[in-house]
Picture 1 (cartoon, each protein chain N blue to C red):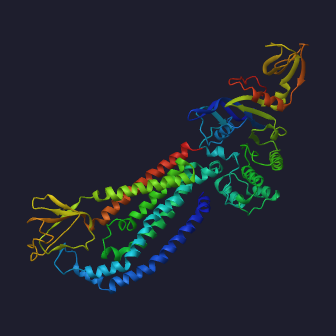
Picture 2 (picture 1 turned 45 degrees about the vertical axis):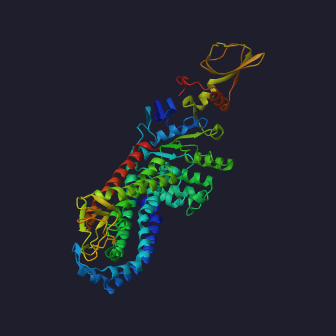
Picture 3 (picture 1 turned 135 degrees about the vertical axis):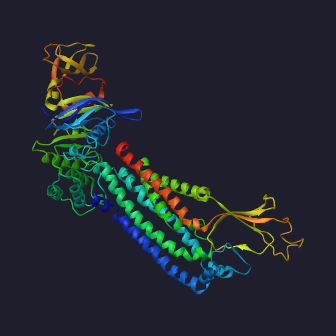
Length: 294
Length: 325
């Protein structure tokens, strides 16, 4: 399977602090992936390294099979919407589209214009006078006009109101429905991405906590409820992510590697949200991410 | 890329054209009237007759004509010297925001992720803005060189402080330096206002140090002497830049600083006269740069500032390519 993004032991240090450390991950081509983590977890750092804005301090990073950073051929194939969707405030949408046409070898002007027009955004108004939602849409139209193989979005909806958020996600999903574009979008809220993503990367405290296809992750994880028991070792459980106890009973969120046959436990399915919250609440710096179904 | 650079900076170009037009509207009419007065009053003719003799005999000078002229236009000349700050303005408003505004608004993440390398982005932007800077500063330097011509000849000469700084090739180099400094400061501080503040301090500091401490020593200093008792005086219309004067006794020891005195032989013996304090053989001295050194010093200073501008631009590009994200 070809990989849109592949990192091995990737790390980025700002002065003394590691924004990202020992990060190994892979994103298969064709997926729509959510990069989830709290603010400061390293999401932007990872995305900025992927588009060559930042250089890794250590480790390797391959994007569409190439190394980013001063790589013009690669930039032709990547669309990027940066955090806060920056646009030149004194440019109109038309001028921004012209700019894209001048700066890129692969560029679809009519596609960009159509997208902006269809959303009712005036093409000849300065983007500084547009609403936040409209600016985000223009930024997305610019990124899509490259007809990118990989589309990276850094918290594209963080500053939008709920309505604009939903509209943005609808437009995004409508435009990548052909399945030829790999998408990686970050958010500190899973809720924005839950319905649209089929792949998940959870970052916490500069480390990857969870990685894999959404369906596989959900089916692998179970909630077990049983009589109170400390430090249990259970057949079929590869890792206990979270445990909580009351006087009488113990509740575990576990990753399984086989069926749970012990009748003492009642087994329940988990939701994606439970899963992410559990991993974010109980980060393990060196948590093994190998063995995840790919 | 050229389209983008032009689109981003055309408004600044328009402001510069308007600024130059205002400057020209002020300087051209006053300059024409000054040139006319300079000729019509006979001062031009008088100075031409005086020639380039180093010393003048009593009565052979144009002092009365030139003092009338400098009285008439002195205030205007002072106002004209305010244009010494124009290069700084160009540096603050063209140079400092060039990179800093992109970083402040985050738009570098937009433009650096298109299909253009940062190096090319920087070279085209810098190239366009520096070309504009060059055109504007050459116009400004030519205009002021022409405007100051009569004032320099009638007064202190074009090597004098501030006179020197607004004419010739030096102002062009100052402007390039100011813009390069602004750009570099923007890549270091990454916000417009701190970059402007840094450029302001950096520009003024270096200009003052060079003006007050270094410029006089670029070339060997000349010394001119003439006796306390006597009647020949130095020709003050040669355009020399005199920056130290005083009186020495016959043995060459400085006996009075910052003054010049002369008594005709007929009154020299008067015990209450101003010259009585100085013994026989005392003489006045002047340390100066000859007016003829104007262009060599201009080129030395212009070369220095241009070289500094080049270094700053190189450092700015290095910052852009490797340090900023």
